[in-house]
Image 1 (cartoon, helix red, strand yellow):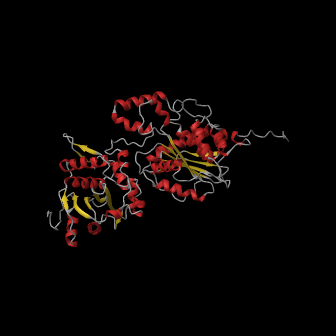
Image 2 (tube, rainbow, N blue to C red):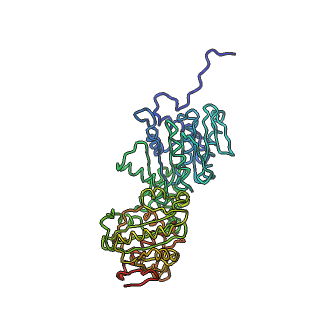
Image 3 (cartoon, rainbow, N blue to C red):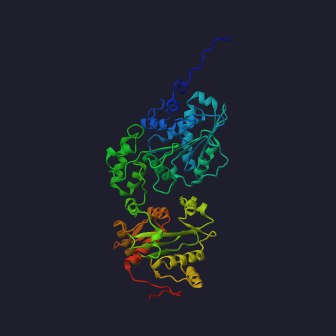
Length: 525
């Protein structure tokens, strides 16, 4: 029978009058069911730290549109990240933040990781009748379509096929520190410009590398928080145990684990800490994953704090004509080549010259995950013509450098030097070259001299980004007598410029006096 007075359907919790934008988002997420683990079948309850973060992200600007366009939450593993990502994505796909023909994406390092958020969203949808009736799930392609608004969701992986032509309304980047390539992040970031109120969220643990895009974002958020820069469109929060705090003191663990005792089990945390205490090889991963510290699993040769203490700015103009020693590390066809000058009489000033092939800069960025093109644009590296290292170009630059500074000696590795030697002879370039072995006999004393200079702050590198990257990559090998040398096989990534610096400092410590290269072999005068 027709009812002239139908009962209106019950409003969703987030549709109540008087709620702020953030309150609507929180109400939506907390209306969703827990699909597995403790509390399954009950409604999600966000942690206080999650509510606070959402309250800071979902605010309107003076023009009535979204104020924050990029949000960062860096927290240790196991603090409810996947559920939060799934809830926020559904909020933008079908909840209070949805829009007509919206495009929502979650992105992970690999296809398997990217599937985690989809799987959580799928489980929530299947247990929520009104969502299940409205959304079309395509499990094979990891996509979801909203029949009413035409909005779509898709899971993406950084190691998958390139995607272009997107007009993202919402993006959540899961564990960005683990992404294989940066390309997907840049594509997604630039795709936001086609929307009126887009939002990109980055949620995950820190990277071990300062050059990783996750580290760039964490550092940027810290600069905003300190007041160094202003950017109302970016809001970031870092939960981490300070590097100088006791990693094994349970009182420090909540600093990186705000959900300790709720989402994350205190017993499991204590067991991992005890394992790391007893087995040192487990400590780096414990610090990174459980304490959210910028720590690598491979023991580093250089303490970051000691390196940064030598970061005073360098005045290049004052170094012209000054005495110095150089280290020259030539690459094969595609690696980095470097000449690094060390000025012992000028507070240990360091001046690096780094070269790499120009035509494969983009490819190298994907492989090494550092901003080669930005470094080249800012003249921190010099891109030589072609796809292989151009040693004639390097020879010309060596001639210019020799005429600018008082080179008392240039230590070089004989390996791969013959081609450059022939070019130097042909061009009539005279360099005070000193053959420098790469074994323990030569590199051991050089490493000691380098370390002494760094610890006594008689090494001023001006925080050169390329050298800083190499310093973070460096790993030493040690012989039975305790002598050390740089290990290019065990080091995390490229270390060529730092090897050149170590040779330069080592040569300076010998102080063998001026040398002149005659063009065929090496002679001293």
